[in-house]
Amino acid sequence: MVRTTEHHTDESRRVLWTSRFAGPAALCCLTFAVLFAVSGCTGAGQGTSAGSSETTGTTGGHMAGPAALVHVSEAAVKATPPRWVLTTPESAVQSYLDWTSYAYRVGQSVTASATTGPGEQVRIDSYVQYNIEQKRLIDQKLDSIVFGKQSSGTTSTLVPAKEKWTYSYLSTSQGNKVVGGPYTATYDTVYTVIKNKNGDWVVASVKATPKGTVK
Image (cartoon, rainbow, N blue to C red):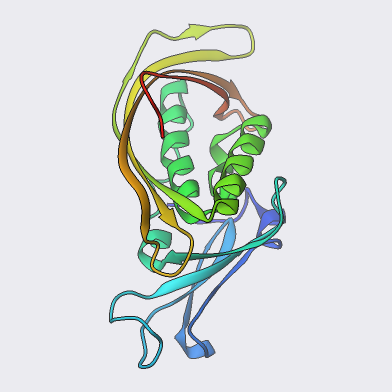
């Protein structure tokens, strides 16, 4: 899990998620890159059943578009992937896939930024913002990945892979109703992986070739 804000201090000032439940006693905090203040309980007259508490997120400060109001379940916010492992090109790709999937689900591109280079972070941010403008989030699961033979250059390593995914589109409104899917997709991908200034492997770019139709 992400346990510090060391990678994202600027972003944490830009984005604040607050519970739709009133009163400071109802709030607990999860701090990771951005500040999520989420409800720890449900109450009478709030329009939800027990166990279905949600956060209301205002996405802002993105490079690709204006702020927007997004509802995300507390369970989705708390379902963070394992902490990223950036010690090898393959582990960096796996962490990138885990954290970009999480970013797409909660509508916050900054959560994946420890696993990417600057250019790829811009692309992820643009895609998150595009989906939010379409009033949707993506809930995706990597069903399988098979890595091919790596090719190393002077400044980067190419990591080929074959991937199969299952994904659905969810409404950004309360309840996150499924508005498309589930679908499946298969890709031949090539990840360009580089070392950042900290000596960690991160994904600089991705070339994905779909095998069949992607909705």
